[in-house]
Image (cartoon, rainbow, N blue to C red; front, side):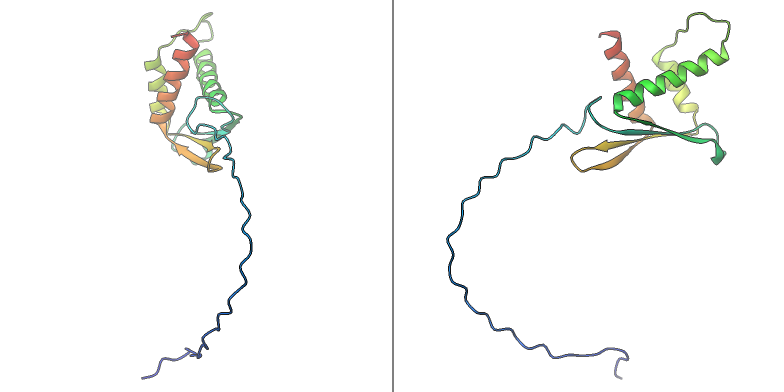
Length: 143
């Protein structure tokens, strides 16, 4: 039984014509300096995606010029929420564990971090954000 819709065509072999040899030019390639792909700041454009509750309408996002700015922005958002919950308190204090409990209580939290080498955004989850926040807070405390 012959297959329908298939057209067969005979292909003629090509003749290979030798080309005259040319002088080869020597080219020196200087590699570009590459930025490290993992750092706490730099120019790693970052988007923070937050969903407070299961309702999809609660989804928000914030844009930052660097991962460090995104971490600082997230911490400021947490502190603002603490102030709203404790309006009479003059000075706020919290631990890293409190911040981690807040992160775990969010329905969804993700970061899209630009990788300058590949020029693509790498998705990062809650665990990455927790560890980077811990590093950032230690750095801010001078440890």
